[in-house]
Amino acid sequence: MKFVDEARIEVRAGDGGDGCVSFRREKFVPRGGPDGGDGGRGGSVVLVADEGLNTLSDFDHQRVFSGERGGDGRGRQMSGRSGEDIRVPVPVGTVVYEADTGEYLGDLTVGEATLRVAAAGEGGRGNIHFKSATNRAPRQATSGTDGERRRLSLELRVLADVGLLGLPNAGKSSLIRAVSAARPRVADYPFTTIHPSLGVVRVGPAQSFVMADIPGLIEGAADGAGLGSRFLKHLARTGLLLHVVDVSRVYDEVDLAADVRSLAAELGSYDPELAERPRWLVINKIDLLPADEQDTLIAELVHELAWQGEVHAVSAESGQGTEALCRRIMAALEAAPEVDDG
Image 1 (tube, rainbow, N blue to C red):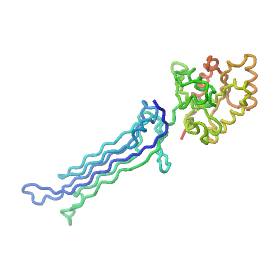
Image 2 (image 1 turned 90 degrees about the vertical axis):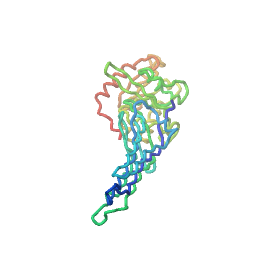
Image 3 (image 1 turned 135 degrees about the horizontal axis):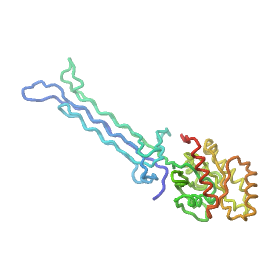
Image 4 (image 1 turned 120 degrees about the vertical axis):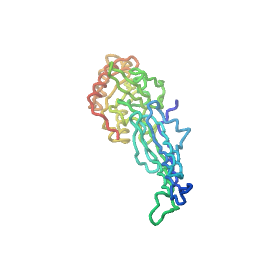
């Protein structure tokens, strides 16, 4: 299924039905008086979080959603039928904005959560409401009000406890494959991962967390370079970031410390609060280093970065260090306060 994390739709709530002008007509009742009923209320448009969805791709095919119009009032004080609300399923994690103004409308983070995005029109009043001592035969009624019309911008942000951050081919996809049942594509060329992948990491019988593999970032990502900021937003809900570094690139005379600083700057450029999120350094592919050089190279990188967070050396390919990393993540998540992603 195609992964789509942005969509624009138009929602139109149903108009209210019109009130009725009617007079009671019965045999032997020559002056029965007004008996026009009220119009029915229209149907609203409601977004519903559906745990069975993980993409906004359905909105490629349908972009307009309309609530039902309310029925008109009738004689004998009969009100019109209320219009049916239309319930539009969206993935859990969908953030909703007014497309024209950018106004934040809501965030559907829990399954079955609902958000009314277009309010229905109210029904008009029938002529029975206008009867008075001086107007015993009113011939006036009101029309139903219009339902709300809106253009919405939908933005899907994955719900994960841990986000993987790093350059293309740092081994993020290999790492999530090694510790979970997720099977993102893995290859030896840049941008193998082109959309976020989620995996549930089980540490114990009742202990697990969700890890997100975000497409690799390059310098200028916050300004749209490479896959750009389109996927940086998926890190917003994560409580912990793992900065994955391919340590084997040191043999290609790559400045690993400069790469780490570059991506840290991209985080700060995109969202200063995100840059302050707890971030661990995960040095990957240590199996490609000679055993007698591993500790030295890792120590040099940590020293050059003046790294203050936790450091973990792993090999996603062989599994070395991955179990210890996952157990440490689980302990940190259980001890950490819940992230407020706005």
